[in-house]
Length: 207
Image (cartoon, rainbow, N blue to C red):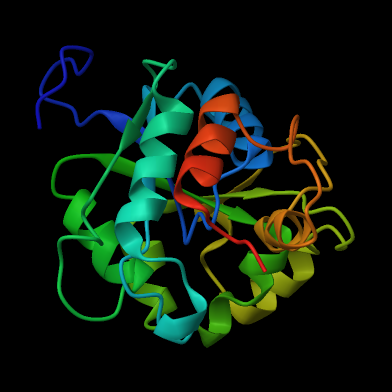
């Protein structure tokens, strides 16, 4: 992928927001936009997980539905782009494999919530992730901010690879949205209208 914004042979600076996106919601979009602005990134790549290694396949909505919802959610923002890198790659969707693949073409910043960042030591090959990309940590409603001392103890020498971004604290989650739909409640103002229409048209998340 080439980018007209890249100058002097440098790689385009992009943010990577991964996840199951089951479904994608306004919190994802607001955080991505804030990080892009705060770190002056050229665009944000939304990377739906093909086969999340931490979730049984039976608990995740089929991938093409999740991909379609992401595409619908970001269609009106030219700075947002869908990446099928994990969907089209066989096997478990390990973030480090994705980051290393993207790093061949981009300077990558992985966007993680404070909750997910604290789980990083349990991930597959986290040291490889730091070697291939930077990390932007954003707040998560209900979770404490990251203590820099924890980072120094857990990943010594990697402090300069992490940036803390004050993004919106929106108390919305995919789990909560699925529960609301199953209970017959509205999700207006929680997901983009295009996503709400897709969910209704395909009968997703109903009890």
